[in-house]
Length: 274
Image 1 (tube, rainbow, N blue to C red):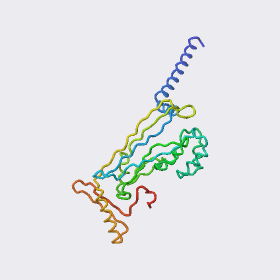
Image 2 (spheres, helix red, strand yellow):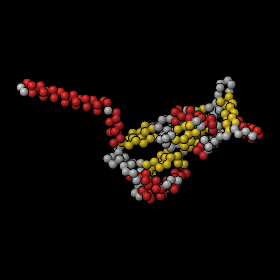
Image 3 (cartoon, one colour):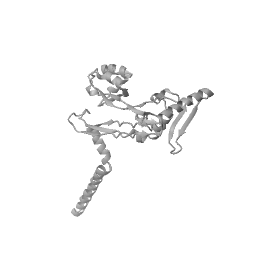
Image 4 (cartoon, rainbow, N blue to C red):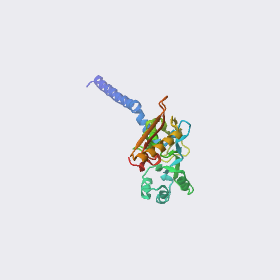
């Protein structure tokens, strides 16, 4: 092989290697940039969701039908717990949890925080707070409260959880307007060290939540209560199994009252037959 041929082969090999490197860079920098960026972010930051407040529902006079009751997410921070077994035995009875299950959750490796219970009432949180338990944390998490109990239950619907444990409206107004009422959760990003623990003086980014819309209905609470009382009386008088009443404003089509029996209490919907 002549010197000219060897030069051509070397030059061709150089061009091929350069093209391969260029294509690889294009793949990393452009095609996979978003994915690699997310993976890098997960290695350096821990993300916590900041729940948005669900919008309230009111009648036409501004009387609240559905509001948010103060409640909390209770979580554990395994790295700040000295004795996980003792921690589980103290916390579990207050939250009506199985101590062994709590112990197993907290014992998993490389976890910064572990959610223990959702929608915990303020009275229980105060019981835990006064014990000043190291590694136990609380985050506000609104709980749905239906001020009139079962009044207008079929109209309002209820809030349950989806397959991921996230609040979701079902049936009635809670279900139909779920996307508007639920709002958008915020995010708190904390820089973490090589062991996964948050760095106290590290970078912190907080995106505030956007609360959901408040619904103001055509419904009149006083008329709703009268309709439900009369419907119950009618069902009892004629021995009926069920009944429904709808009162509509003929000028606007707005629903002034709507009642159906049998009904249920949205605060404890799981206790009623489907």
